[in-house]
Image (cartoon, rainbow, N blue to C red):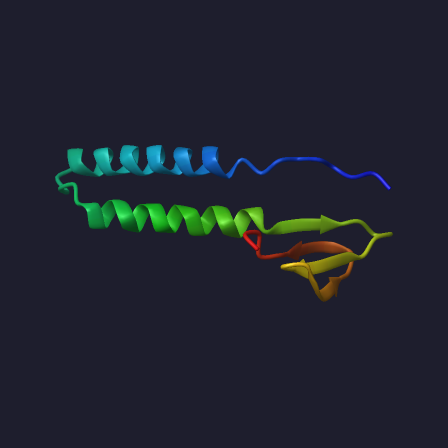
Length: 89
């Protein structure tokens, strides 16, 4: 069985999200909206939620079954196709 050893660069994704939030807020401040930490927090949380949602999609091949382990315990099996799995745990 072939396994893909692909690392998940969470640190670089978070850094990129912070930079994108700062750029978005700077564009908004040029249009007259003042910078606030609440606005930055809102952009950052929204961007993190979108990244978590996108990273959770996994493709299970037609001849495989996806076994879901949560904290080392069997919690379910996924069939072939596009599946969404909570990526953090």
